[in-house]
Amino acid sequence: MIKPVYLTEDDTIVMLDQRKLPLEEVWLKINTPEKVAEAIKTLTVRGAPAIGIAAAYGFYIGVKNLTDASRRKLEDRCRYLTNLLGSTRPTAVNLFWALKRMNRIVEEDTVSPVIKLIKKLRAEALRIHEEDIEACLSMASFGSRLIPKGVKILTHCNAGAIATGGYGTALGIVRKVHEEGKVEMVWVDETRPLLQGARLTAWELEKEGIPYKVICDNMAGYLMAKGMVDVVVVGADRITSRGDVANKIGTYTLAVLAKHHNIPLIVAAPTSTFDLSLESGDSIPIEERKEEEVLNFAGMRTTPPKAHAFNPAFDVTPAELIDYIVTEKGVIERPLCQNINKLLKDAD
Ligand code: MRU
Image 1: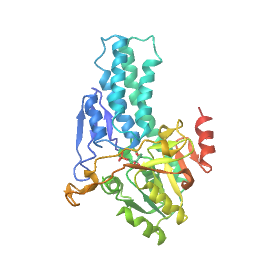
Image 2: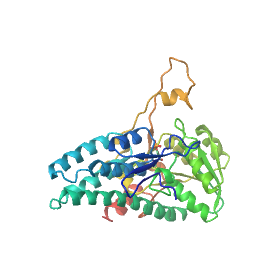
Image 3: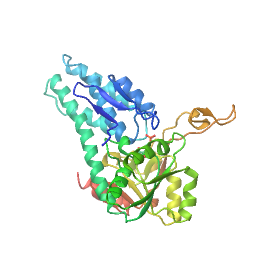
Image 4: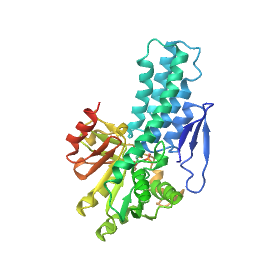
């Protein structure tokens, strides 16, 4: 199983440089929280759960040398790190969820010496990573039960092993369905502007020998109209209490198309992707990225010199367009709002 980010025994963060895929497989060694923040910002590491895990490791390496410091100093440092890592990407809630879990270790233990708290922070970061892998495996087995034999799946962006602790959410389901011999074809949306589908999902599927073809984002409707898609499976960056889903830009377009063609839309996400403090997807902060990502293609200018572009990185799919949300705790069916509350709130 590929883990896009991990912590070594001697506390180095090792990270797959996703900007270089699929042409080069480069593993970076990172030793400062500032560099982790930079890696998250630049999409060296990306995908909602993977960002959370990277932030947790970044937080730990940011405190690990404070063994002789006072508790006050540790608390100051935690505030600095929360701010540093939390101001990298605004949409995926897993980032803030992971930072909250790290902070809670210090807040809830007012008696242990700093040296012990640092050990506990290391263990917590590792636990966040382990739990995410377990969640992916569990989602895969819940999700595969929804999918029939001979299926043609359409997916968008990359919600695979490299977007998570390992194995993947949407692509974890695809992996499992393939293991069960049920996949006929995976249609991979190329996912402009940064090509997470063409570069990353295709790379993962290729490695696993899963049958796939890449399509341009604007081809999905044609395929659906021709009966070439049985189900759409995507990941998520933030899910509100009523089931609105923020995910890579273009997901909403797919959802509208899928509804028109009566094709089920499955969203796969661990419970760390839910933000129950928000009801409407309109309140989810949407990251806007540099216009160069749209004005250029593969590093080459494709637009007139004076052209400008608009570049929202995510969109929101309203709950009414979603058929199932697969989590590690089970499948949420419609009505999503009621069933989200049942599964998440009642389970707490
Ligand atoms: O901008 P990215 O590449 O971080 O966007 C990633 C996505 O939108 C994924 O679909 C989402 O984070 C789920 S990853 C399991």
